[in-house]
Image: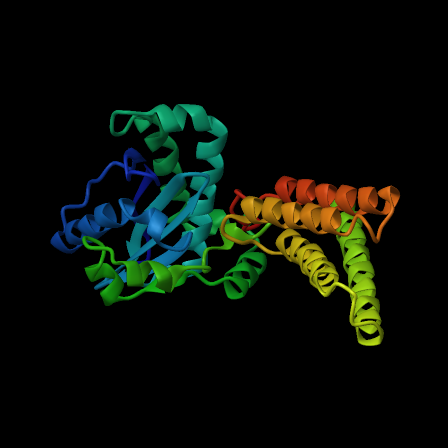
Amino acid sequence: MSMVLFASVVRVRDGLPLSASTDYEQDKGLQETKKHLKGLSKKLSQFPDRCSLKTGPYNVNFTSSLGVGYLMVCTENYPNVLAFCFLDELQREFLVTYDTKRINSAVRPYSFIEFDNFIQKTKQRYNSPRSLSTKINLADMQTEIKLRPPYQLSPEDLSLINGFSHSTASKYKGIAPNQMLEPVTLPGIVACILSILCGALNLLRGVHAIESILQNEDEDFNYVIAFFLGTAACLYQCYLFAYFSVWRNIKSFLAFALICLCNMYLYELRNMWQILFHVTVGAFATLQIHLRQPQGKAPDYNV
């Protein structure tokens, strides 16, 4: 019989158990699987935010979002779609019931043990598929799983739970979808267009500077470098706005600083209004990069 057997909620940063379902099962295989679950809970931050692990006749599934992880053990034939829908429902209720400050300040294990009541009720619902048929759009959930399937942990991953290596960390780099950025806003689009315009103007002036050097050897080649560096900085700001990157805000400030330095060097070739325009656009683009942060909320399963 396919069913959910156990579920728990933990804090991602240190694996502190916050709540769990009451365990009535004494099966040795299940108890061994729960040991794997305990090990996983302490390493959630090092894995993608949606994973599955097969351990004998049981499957372990977990998701993490906003610093909280949701884990479950189910029988191997339990539908994958329903498993992650179950976890998503736990996530929704937990985040509505408890605020982030309270979660982060929890010191004792199972500080939110009263959440067990909701876990038990949800388990009963998901162990009775007939009660779910009118409440869940299976087609939408199936599509979500196909578009972004859970990462399948291997026995190698399991053996590294108690000794996580740097090479394993690089293996998961970039998998987690919480690196997706927030939706693009109109000011952000305007900032990108203006940055591209500034980059194009710098590129055009750089080409003209090269032509001047070819015609007159006394021209300063450093002007060409300044124009091209300004172009690169403007385009790089567009890239930082569009895509997630490590140290993204710092990189945007460095790009803005480069824009300022290039325009300071080119003060003899530009009037004050032109310099002010380029610097203002650079500052505006930097602000938009800072405002467009990575998404913290996990995707919606349309439950």
